[in-house]
Image (cartoon, rainbow, N blue to C red; front, side, top):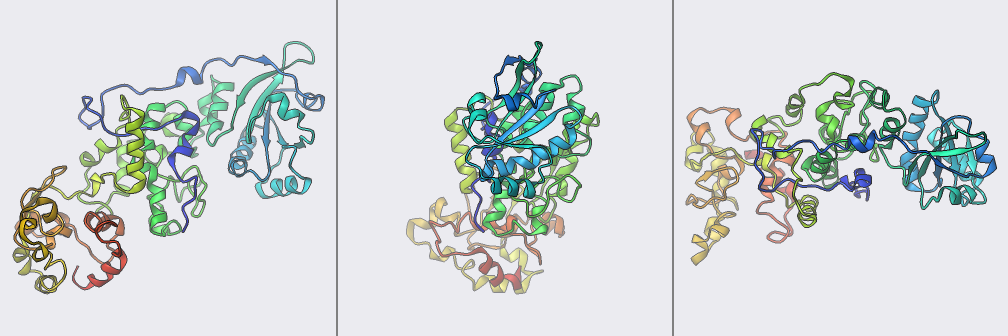
Length: 466
């Protein structure tokens, strides 16, 4: 499956130029978050609009009897096609307060306009800017562009209330908050209706920037690498609100609800309906025993630091973005818990067949492949032997005499040997989610080290003893 060019958090936050990364040396609180206050953009959002005189062609002026939203677009423009469903929905919500007019660009044909209206269910009037006068009057530089105009104080005068150059996904909330600041939240965030991350980012800029270079921001993207973007068993935890009335719909790859956005944790519309839910309760819905390694809230919270971008340079932000999209960024939630390794002999009494199969496998013979100084080189041993212990965030220094043993894939066996339980060892049972074991395997089976290696074929080969 080909990865769509828009499938990146940068398109979502484009109007805010929002790029951010976790890191830095700032003091942190008990959650592991940088100390600081939310960098809300509410002052700009709620600043009164300043009406300015506007001269439109006469046929457009005649349409303006109250505040009117003009959507300037091209029927063949991909950005316009992506934006129009939100505009149609906005019209349905605000038609008693705001008139809507679609303005097709001069290059559009009548057939294209008719097809566009039919496909996207455009129910408000459409005007063809056949001579380009409207575009020149509003100084439109691209499509889609949106403008809110209204009657001025003097008879026949028209004023500009708002302009969106361009109109972007999620801009509906900003439009509502600017036009009706006193009642804007109730209009912009109706109860149980998902809005998408950009609507949140309008005010919560610091939090949105932090999110934009987190693993949550590339959650949907990762499905494409595995051809899983149409698999309902996987998609639900990589999008927002799937299965709910206004949430993500399977197969809608252009949705503003792709990825694990703000509302995946804070609920539809966030707490703006007056009900603040415990966001942390949503974590275990996806980070369960089958899809995470020894997940706890304490383990996860530091990695969703909402203020992680403070003080970082553009270069640091770009480095983090590159690491995320290339798959080289650390995956701390897939790290084994702390503990000491016991060696394959400790596993043998309960798992004799598995240990026997391992002894004659490539993993079992991996350490014997090292020669001379390689036998004492930690960099070589890290992929050819089992660490004596695991400690979060710390590279192992010593290794068992065996090859790539059981605990290299299943995690340290110290607690499991003392009290055997499925909860204190990483089991690779019948489902064996690739999203968990992949990070273990690919830490050594990299394209540079093992170009022909394929995860799925090797999982199939070891199915009998995992």
